[in-house]
Length: 251
Length: 342
Image 1 (cartoon, each protein chain N blue to C red):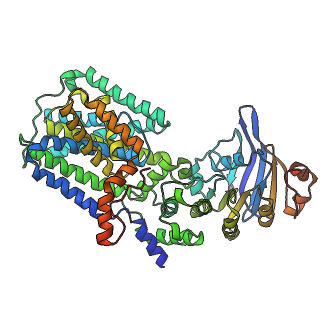
Image 2 (cartoon, rainbow over the protein chains, first blue to last red; image 1 turned 30 degrees about the vertical axis):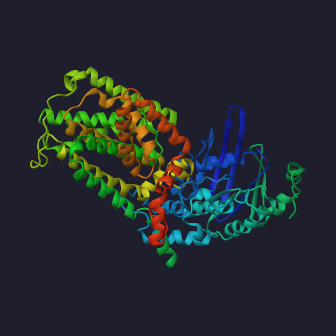
Image 3 (tube, chains in turn brown, green; image 1 turned 120 degrees about the vertical axis):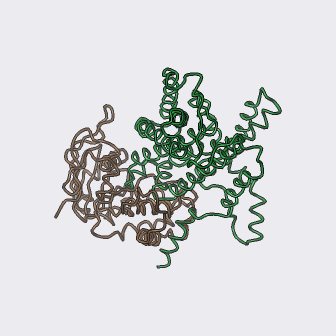
């Protein structure tokens, strides 16, 4: 199997606090890989280093074998690494149509086009329409994002990441804060991602993790505690100890 | 696929010309024929409108605050003045473009300083650059004429055909033509993917980068373009008044500009135009009734605008026209509150 995304001895400190400790992860191509751990384990910090928002103190990050450690955020996206945010990072004043349209335009290299009007490229329009339909956003495509219900915003958050046509997708708690009634849409969308997209899922919800992931890494205090298939991780006494009192792990 | 054409239709929604816009420009043009005794003040408003549109491009669309936009205005003004005075380029339109380009070069060079910081740093950096230029202009008085300014500028006819007249008629229509052309260009740009990406950067730079937008490159591009616009506004100032003095760089000019844009509203291009009209009218009105305290009243108006909220004011003002449109044409108002104006 080829490795889609890899970290080698990643280290990150905030002042005296080591938030990422000698972290080496390998995520296989096409995997459904989950990164779990208790609150404050440093999961989001790892994501931020993978995407380039934060720079690691040392260590390397490889995307499909190529070193991307020093690449800025937008160049990693163009190389096929895209993410969703734990807390929605959307454009409040823009509509879903504009938000997704922009992501598609950027990917197809039309983002810097300052003359041709939005909406006049049929290839871009087709893709926007497809995404809006898949993510149940067609009926609200002209509403300002800030006015949308949270569940719809969450869908948009994921749709924007998908619009970049990633080969590796990082999902940071995709179902966080979504009311029960709207959860189904999110889970269905996440479940129906094409198999050739490698997914790294960060999640608190153990039901979601165990129904989705085929491999799990457990992060505790910034370091890798254990890694393996779900059954093995669920049986691991160390993992149980970490999660004891937080949640019972059942398969 | 119908959804796709639907998407295309709605994506171009804002780029389409509304009746309100056509009416707006017809009224502006009409003013040129209705008030022949008012060319000077109307030309002044057009220049201010163009200058404010320049600030709107960076502030309203890309979210870059500036307290030193007069730097580009001043460079444009002096460039146009020097070109005419020394007979380097005597044809006004060509000189105008060259002056705009001079400001643009400065804009490009300083954009690297401006994009680095956050809002407060940007305010300081832009302010500093304008002050610096003002000081330089004073220091090199052999070139700029120092505190006396450039004197004895004589404008040649436009395209060698249309001379500037003493009533300012040529100046007015010349300025209007320049403003309209640059407006068309800006309108085109803001409705392109590039323009949309600026709004995305203003809304959320973190997400903008996360969908692959090269944030810094885009900011440099729009800052440079805005500098060109401001330079043109400055050059128009020199060409239509035949003077260029140190106050083109003045801090008050940059600060007023911010007021004008706030009054007119940011992020829909007409804010600068409407703001310029209202600002000059208020200035005129207040300085007639209280020559000493007009600034107090302008300040008060500004506070009221901010407190009441421009959106609400727009709604009140547009209530009747929108009602008529709804009743007569049976559809939603075409003159709506600018959507990015919250």
